[in-house]
Image (cartoon, rainbow, N blue to C red):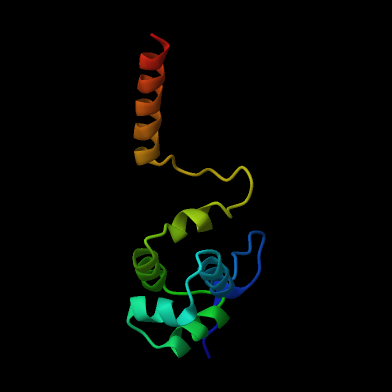
Length: 107
C-alpha cells in the first residue's frame, strides 16, 4: 500500500488543483469539451482532472499552453502571505522599460 505524504494537510496545504482548473476554465469561458479538444484528450479525462487534488506538472503545463494562459502564476499567487517568490525577470525588464518611457514623457 502506497501512502502519499504530499496529500496530507500540513501547515501549508496546497490548493485542490482539479477545482482550481475547473474554476479557471469557467473564468476563461472555456468548456470542458473545448479544453479536451485542445489537449487532445477525452472530455471524461478533463472531468477526471477536476476530481484530482493533485495533477502531474505535465498536464498543468500542457493546459497552460493550450489555453495560452499562465496557470502557474495563478498558482504561485496562492502561496502563503510573505512567501519568498523569485522576481520574474521578464517583468523586471518591462518595469525598466516603463521607467525609461516615463522619463522620456517628463521631458
